[in-house]
Image (cartoon, rainbow, N blue to C red; front, side):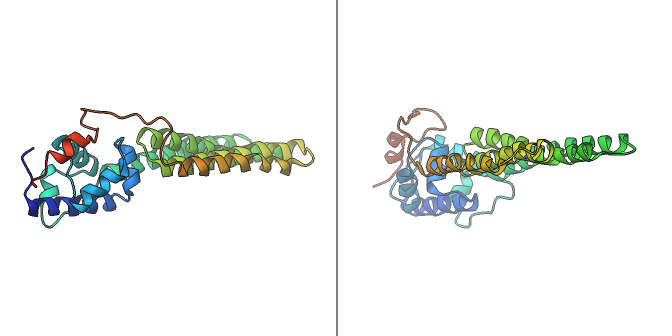
Length: 226
């Protein structure tokens, strides 16, 4: 990439911050997604350094814009960036789960002329079972796309919804005593999820170099005009 002029450097810095905020991401979120540190992101947005052309291409693809958009004085608001697309795909997959649940519910309730209490409970129980299934989908998608916030939320929902799914049949059908004690089990798991979320840097951090998705310091300083 050619050397960046001083005025273009400031425009680039402003736009890098603008598109990141528009994607509802923190500097740490973006750095984690691209396997680098939030300090590098901060330097870009302050105009102290600049990303390489490979990184700009990756960022442009991620935000749903072109590389030239980073150098426009008036940035455009992406209508459909990649982060938003990921969220919509996740929601769509969850809706499909509940579409299957709805079909099963209608079939089961229409088959029986007289629905006994236990049968009635298990038809409605399908709606509750859909929650942990949706949570698993959320964990899978958010892990693939590197969204730590959504992953944490999905794990928390999975932990508590699974507990509810175990508690209800035991309490209503089996009527086992003191089943409320089951809800003590998710508490330490929830604490572990919270601690994992606030663990900003992994113990063993893998640095990826010389790839379009790697944010290499060697590419950063070479793009500046001093």
